[in-house]
Image (tube, rainbow over all chains, first blue to last red; front, side, top):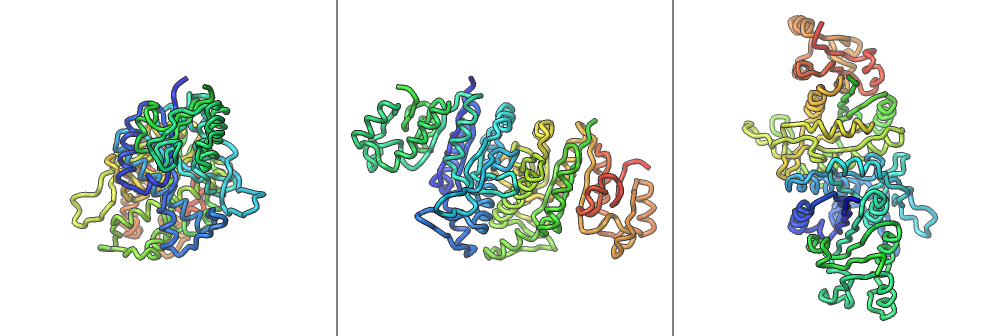
Length: 262
Length: 262
């Protein structure tokens, strides 16, 4: 099967113009079919502050009220998404920017039954794999903003990590999918404070050993559990590392590669 | 050839939630392939004011400085575009929202050589008809925000009327294109103050007569000249009227229909 790379970039890249520009040039130079999922960085927070929209936080989680939804729709699906696409076009890579409402790409429902009312936050129900395939088969790379819809006219703020994972899983029937999560660290670290302690490969057996040794920072465990869930749903490999090292991450020369088998 | 309807809606519809919702339901009920081009209404102006971005006007034209470009990208390509798409999905019509950078849909260049420096304003160079056809042939309607790009990474604010016209012209090789301009009035009026004086049909011969009689309001003449330019470039008909009457406009039961031949 043909290769597909699904890459999630975090706010630390979005917020840094030079880093983002450099990342996009590398992204453009990676051959083959690609999906890029982005968050919005601090720009949404800053814009909310400028507009005097109070940030409601409950237990460390941001609540998406109607005004905040408007801001994240403007920033994520508008400013960030279109600037990324324009830069990719400049780098000679054709790309289209979408949110989950576009072509019914990502159907979700407003989160329900949670102890906290998160507001206009969506949990993903389905990926429209036909749309992704139609575009990818025309050699159009896809840039996804983390806004979904409920098919009733409501846009919903949705976690970008989850979107990347669902796209990777959904397309794993049609492609050999590598899912790349980029974040601030160089990979999964034995010592969270020391970037030179990257664990190069993790498989289910070594994962159990590493956990037993207490060698994995607690904050990484949900990420790794998600990675194994993706692998169990057909994704070929999950790579965790720094966006700045994208080229090496894909080749297995940097970051942590997680595989379903030893 | 198959029919294609290219519809431009103005700010008066975008700014009125109930009117927009009603328009989109009618749009969804119109059979066949459709492209919707929208402006941004007063929301961009309001957001600029909230953010203390001064509106620079020169000879009645708004100048798009860097901060204003950011605002219009957020509002047009983000908030307005994605809410229209979500509402169309809710009405059972598949649609994808794009700006000119997406899939290299609309290539433009920063306006040059004008007596006034309009800032980040684009004049259209080319429509990517392949992209439009790929999407339309999958029965995906296209919603276009009036932001283009220059293929060098720069987004550009671009007149929505011009975008609609260029799309209609570009696709007239592949489709029988009707171009619908919606605005506040019921059509081209003999008496600009009286909505009951709509001229139902205009052709090149009657246009000359109407102009000679002084029966056409001066402000309409550039619009009509543009309509004839579109017809001369292969567009089948141009219809001018109220967005609220979309169903009747398309059937020739309301508004003004402009044809290349008597």
